[in-house]
Image (cartoon, rainbow, N blue to C red; front, side, top):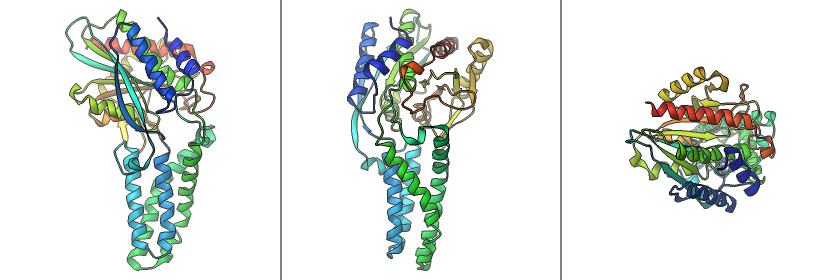
Length: 385
């Protein structure tokens, strides 16, 4: 049967760039269906509707905020202040993966999740979901270099407080009837203009081949499904899940969580971007877009023990993945028990992240193998209770 690396090659080379809701993403889902069928498993395909862009909601929000400036200076001070605070609220909701009016305005497309269930040899005492997303991101300027990424993160970090400051000045101007309060708001308005420009530029770029992000994660889900078919766990039922549309706001994981509320509190293991040179195995204690999303403490403790016991794998915990998210975020919101593997280097860099260089030739096979060995050890530890 194909190995993880074989799956990586098929997804990133044979299929290639797999933008969210595109025909190529659908082809990747069909590939997962074929693999599950060849293993003698029953594949389940669950369609859902998703946004087609991760950047469009923020382009709409910042563009709307910028439009509030002429409204304010032309005399609509209350409209500008209230409109700005509404857009700030919508932005905050989007950053926490919560439905909001921005999602009504973005273009939509159809996508799908694919999963198969691997039963244990004995009675089911616990359930684990192995999750890897199939889609790939665009290649925006904001991710083109470490310097560009630092600028982007700084602008995003300052952008929301800056918008709140603008709203406060507009509100004072509305209460006092004095439009001069809008003049100091022009400076943070430049921040919004920069964020708006980056969001527009991002959607004009091509999709990455996504060998590392995330053919490695989806490929590992498929490879582990094959191994679990040969070597089933004793008391742990494993769901092998390949999601769509992670790159545009974890729509696939959110749809899966909504559709399977009856699962209770399953363990949710996210495999994402696992083959960068000089990285991993690396598991996240926390990921933060606006609010912190924390991994399950018992799973973290278990992973720490495995890292100590198998020091040859070189695994380590990362305290906080800032300005980013994984498919674990919707699971955490639902009260599930997640842990996410994202192979950052020890210096915090995620190799080839959303760059044209994220191709098969730049995947480190040895890093992938060590990560797969670590995840397998974690599955064994979970099964032992």
